[in-house]
Length: 390
Image (cartoon, rainbow, N blue to C red; front, side):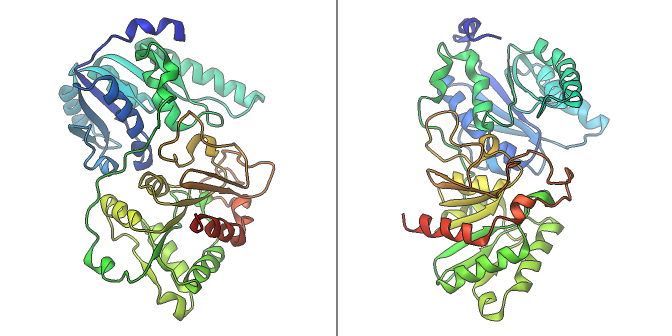
C-alpha cells in the first residue's frame, strides 16, 4: 500500500488490539517500541499480546499490556482449536510482527483488520536467490490480501525496530512522524536477585554473557579468558551470565575452567540462576555489559547499561541493540570495526564479507565465524577503556 493511500485509516480508533510475536524472547523485546508508539495513537485501547510459552518474560510488568496469551511453539490440534475459539474475532486490529504463516493465521482468526511484516527477501540476485524471491512473493500474496498494510523485511538496510514501527505507518497522516521523537525499548520490570548472587557481589561489576543461541555467533573461549583476566586485574568483579540451556551452562563452565585461581575468585558464574526480570536487575546495577549477538544484549541496552557487543554475520543495521532515546530509523552503519551510538558500542571483526547474514562461514548453525575468531581481545579492551572513561 502506498503512503498516499494511508491517510484514510489515520482516524481509525481500535478498542482492542492484539500484538503477535511468535518467536524468541529477543523478538518479543524489540516489539516494545511498537507497543509504546501504538499507545500514543490509541491511549484508551486495550492491548493484548500473543506469543510462545516461556518466551514472554520480556513483557513482565509492561504497563501497556493488559493480557498475555501464551501458546505452544508446536500446538496440538486441541490447543489450536481452543486458541482459535478464544481469539475468534475478539479484536479490532491484529499487529503481526513476524512473517510466519502461523502468525498470520492467528491474526486472520482474531481480528477484523490486520497489519503485518512480510519476509522471504533474498540476500543476492543470483539464479537461486531469484527463484527464492519468486517463491516468497507467491507465499506472501495471501498475506498482503488479508492485510490493510504490510512492511517488507530488509535484513541489511532496515533496523528491526524500524520495521516494527512502520507497521503503524497506515495510521499516521505523515508516516515520517513515527521517527521524529526519541524511541526506546521498554525492559521488563526488575525483580530482586537471588541471595546467593547478591551476597557474592562485593565491588563494581561487569556482566558478561558469552552464550548465543547458535554456535556461529560465539567468540573463542581463549578470547573470553584474556578479557576476563584483564578486567579482574583492573579491580572489577565479573559476573558470567547464561540461560539455563545446557550448551550455555557448559560454555560458562568451560570459560570458568580456563581462569587461574586468583581470577576465578573474582568471577561469579550465574549460569541458569536468574529469571529475565532478575537479569534486568543485575544489568541495571552493572557498570558495563559485554556480550555477543543475543537477546540479553538487547536487554542490557534497554536497561541503559553501557553495552559492548560483538557482531559477526548479523548486520547491525538490522539487529543491533537499540540505543535508547535515539531519534530516527537507523542508528548504525552496515560495516565498521567499531561504532558507538548512545550507550551501545558494536564491534565487528575484519573481512570484506562482514556482515554476510549467513550462519557462519559454513552457513549452518554449528559453524565457526572467522570474523569473530579474528576479533581480537585488544579491540574489546580499547572499547572498554573508552566506554568507562565517559
